Image (cartoon, rainbow, N blue to C red):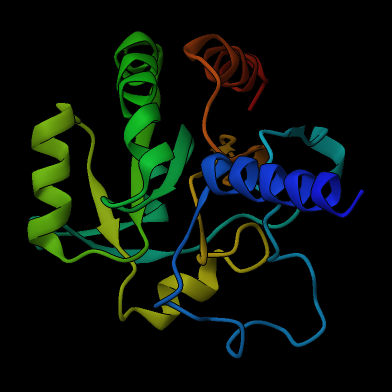
Length: 199
């Protein structure tokens, strides 16, 4: 019986490890609201859609991209944007990179924007990742940027990746995807649905 229990625990641990990466070197728990579990990510592949009437305030953020330019939420005002939280050493982030790029290419003509939020790397590592996986949309860098990290505290923990947010034309989070994207279809449907909403 003990062997069976240990085997089950080991199996669950392996599944959790494959579902998402956790950045142990970027502990933000003391920066987030004590006792508030909104920032906790259960990276189990769940997809959460939020009805328009129940969405919170618009996101407001400013960050520095891998090329040193500034990107802010105001750059996407009135548009749908997909935010993907990732870092280069994260296996699931690598696995889903082609899905993200494919969906970006498929929806940018309809007005969707994509923006990566790299939670751990410097510009060199992030740029190398983009080149390796042929990512053509930009990323901003959260390492060392407390204000940027706190801007997303209500919606995702920057200790866990990957996580993907679909943001509506009013800047509000319309959907969250926890963990690795299963396929391009799921994200495409969420983006299309958000694009179809009346502004």
